Length: 339
Image 1 (cartoon, rainbow, N blue to C red):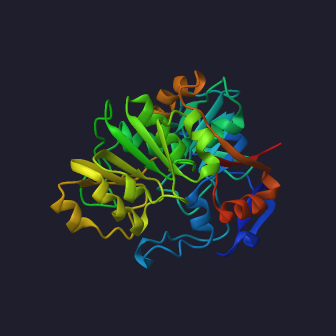
Image 2 (image 1 turned 135 degrees about the horizontal axis):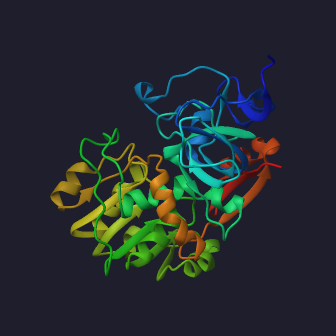
Image 3 (image 1 turned 90 degrees about the vertical axis):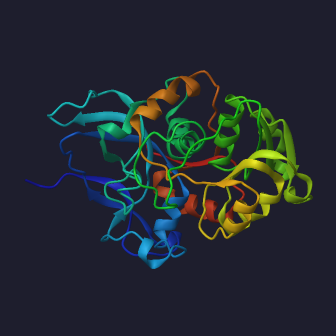
């Protein structure tokens, strides 16, 4: 029997956006506990461009192993095409969204930058109906990151980023700084912190100020004119959505007993200073959770949390989407649409 095919964006080697090829690919198999979804939209996240170039910034022992060709894409919104025979709680025709197989399927095993994707039912939720597929696809990874950092980790899996379990901290009445507040994760961090009762100071470049104030920022710092670490003091929590080695500069701005949450903790070298200042430094490894996505649907439907779209591209133009990501200064999420 001939193998059924679909269109997908695949790569056969690591490299820049030019390695992405829109081509025919085998339709994914639907195994026990899985659902086949016809993709209407998929978003682009940092792990997509990191994997595309082989995670060259990670230590060799942390780089995922697998074989080519691979399909990128964790975040999807679409319609259930079929379900496994063992029953999944979903039916053909259901409109759904998901973060697919993250981090366990990081090497592109049946992912979302394609016309169809197989999704473990536990990673899937009925999508918000008051927003479109493009916005729904923009939510999963970035919003789950914010939710798992700030509200509920939602799992007990070991954290490869640190020896201890990440624990959210109380936010009501606290002063919270979000660095990189206009980005895919940052604009959700801002909204979730505000929703939980924090006084939020957003750090970004000036062109994002109007948007971030509209999303709920109480104060704004234009980092191109003012170094935030020079004007901030006595804050309860800094969420550094940029992260890396530069996150340590925020330690002096945090009160004793406060916390620093770098979304990307790799390269952070301020551990001794944090101990001296009695500051908790912690990061979460975001993990797929259909249950949490279902919990977030009412907040997306009533506008309590909004998905900001930076730009959209047809799936066939995935290279252009990756080029947009490489140019930086992203406002919200980059989304691929599937006709």
